[in-house]
Image (cartoon, rainbow, N blue to C red; front, side, top):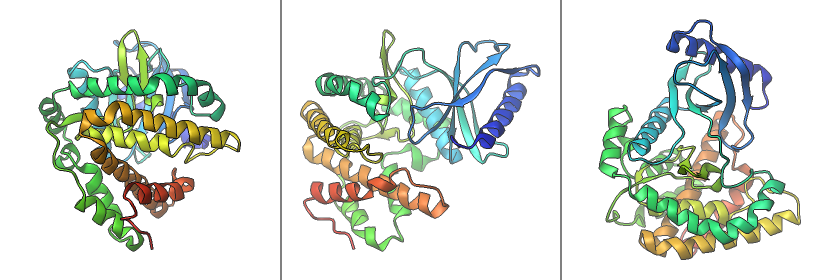
Length: 341
């Protein structure tokens, strides 16, 4: 929707009508019309402002479009669970499982005044932050893990179920179940599903609130402590999931959007180094290297499943260019146990 001006206008109209009705303010208008934010590669994010400001609504806001409706409920529940435990998230002001005529749900949140841990995802912006990422991010990452681990998982689960999150999404293992369902008919990827089921670790000593995408662009650091955005892959699960998922994001840099050389080669070297440093800081905190490697494999499978689903829907897969890298990483971390036909 980012590049479709007509679609953005439809969003602006539908969202304003819905907010007027929900807030009981028929004269509500935009001070600033929704405009796409550049920070998210895979999310549809738009910033906007309102006039007159409704009671309790101040500053700028972000609307995030989400599909399907169950995902909206999951993210709402995760926001509430994290907030109830004192963990920083943007204040959630309004949500809807199905915005009329759009076939999408939405979450409307306050726009945080601070910036994320990195300046942006564009190659030149990201390059400016590489020294900071190499030097400080692995330690910061371990601090975020520690903060997530302090959230009471039982209370978080109760919040999710109370908010109507389906049990299959709320309980541990949702990513494995989703991958298994999506790839069931993909004979070339059958070995991936078999390996993931055969090598699934025993349950951890303690389940945790997990984010699922602890990329620096989803982490705000400031005087108010740590705040996390984009809980698309969050849930109640093994804390090693956050480490394995994050390592893949760095280890496969600059996929899935590689810049031209020589920036590409420099980004790859930096990414592998950051992934290794995350391992040295965090693997033993979450059960060891073997456990983390399993979740690296699961993250690769999640991305492959997304590619399959997006191709089937006619959409352009976000990780299309990165498929060969995902396959190579799976082969390496499983010591060749997974083969592709």
